[in-house]
Amino acid sequence: MALLVVTFLTFVDKVFGDLEQFSEWQRTHYGYMLAWRLLVYATLAFGWLKI
Image (cartoon, rainbow, N blue to C red; front, side):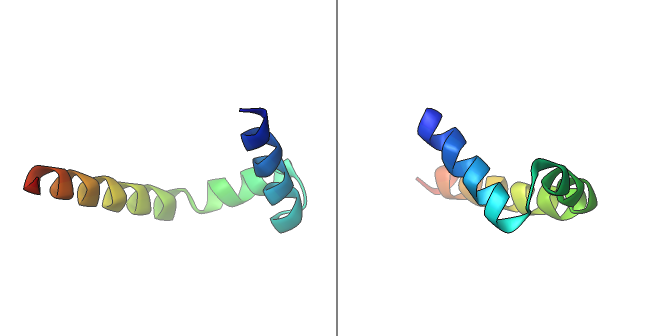
């Protein structure tokens, strides 16, 4: 679990600079991320129902 946290924080630091900029990015892209997540869930559900 600690490795996951360190990896995430390192990624945020390299890509966004700090957690504040990451939070701002999340707020501005909420709709796109929601649509992407729903598409992934629908694809997984469709694949599961085919089995």
